[in-house]
Image (cartoon, rainbow, N blue to C red; front, side):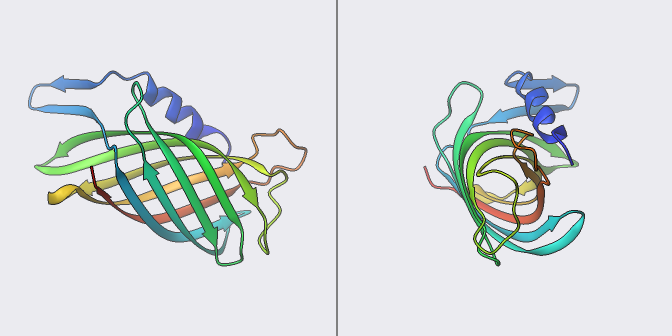
Length: 170
């Protein structure tokens, strides 16, 4: 995977706050105060490599985005801490309240006992699709890519596939 998820994030940034059609609409959501915990599979060089636990805090909306603070740690001790932007679009599909989220965050990677990603600065971009429940709960499946965007000669990248559970607290 290369920078395609970052390009998708940029493309979605161009969308307005809402799009309506006959019998449907898509609205840009404000998810300030959302806490998310996720867990899933780390993939490295196309192979399942281990597990990751991730925590995300969404901050008050800034323009079209919600800033996020993001932290993750793998079962091999690799840790990543980033600060970036998140955008979410809410819609309904056959009466089911669905959402799609897009994120981009630069951060710092500490290898620990995990793989060498080539540079301590790593950019993480991702997409998630999920269902919204009552009381501001959300459950989603996410896929993201992390790499140093070729600012170093060695740029192998790492992907994660995760189940995410979120709740908005304010």
